[in-house]
Image 1 (cartoon, rainbow, N blue to C red):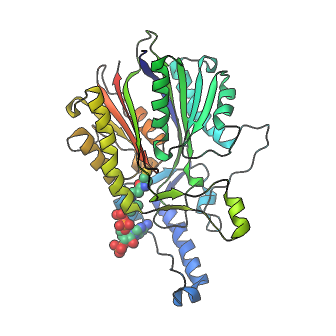
Image 2 (image 1 turned 180 degrees about the horizontal axis):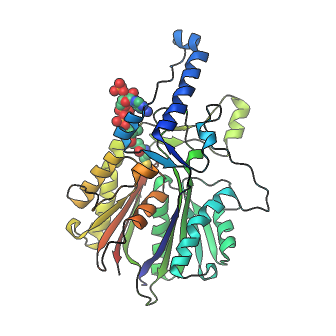
Length: 371
Ligand code: COA
């Protein structure tokens, strides 16, 4: 059995920032116009009026103050409430691959690796911009790798599902170096006209380079990985290839992103720590032996509760840091960003645990020790 090492990580977030105040101003302008245009149907009880949002609610309920976004003007324009992204020609790099490369390049550079040395590329993200060829094939080609590649999706837990597979393949000797990248352009999936979700997501890309130990010092030993699912419809996005066919039957069908926030909160806070603790039990890791938990960033109260259940002690910014305030929920890239931003101060021999959770429900956990 080989030892698997996280050799390097990379992340990138766009420089465009939307504050809560900007987002709420545009959402409320949309809601006002919607209510005025539908006054008769609302008065007749045929449709609900659009409720108003507030920055204070968003900050208090989620811990999010700002989010970095791929394209700002289209999200704030009440006629679109969606990023504006020009279609590209076949011969040009795709938008999402370009986005991914901004995290892939620094990960390779930090490790001193050429793309040709990579055996496998896994694109692990909530959504891919096309069905085929896989985004992973494009990224593999861009870095000059010649092995295998595939895309996987498990919502906000995707990156740790990718790491789980990479770890297993490296331990078993099927590959020596695997790149797992998570380009998450969640503002294209989100429904900015729905008050209960309009503030949640930001955009960011991350990459993890996992290698078989070849004696090179440094990096993080992967002590173990674990994934577990429990089906739920309480967090769901119905965008997909079948929408065009569905509109031939119902031209007004507009698939969206739906969630029962309360239910998701409750279910995930129960499930995620169990998966992390199962992993810890399997590898003989006691909570007091874990210096830090890097958790997926969805909601600050979820981070508090999940950290406490994993670590067996109250959360502090030291033992379970949060990047929510600045970035919001960047889906599966968030756990990797959190790890990279908050691990330099750890010492050789320190142990930490990553845990990511999201729609599915899917939960991924990985225990790592600094070398
Ligand atoms: N602005 C102002 N008020 C709002 C609002 C908004 N954007 N959204 C909801 N409210 C109001 C509600 O109408 C409700 O008012 P009421 O008490 O008069 O009925 C009140 O605020 C509380 O709403 P509630 O839905 O209970 O808020 P919450 O405290 O549960 O927070 C979430 C909502 C979405 C932040 C929270 O449920 C959550 O984070 N859930 C997990 C979702 C998630 O992270 N999904 C991704 C997982 S990977």
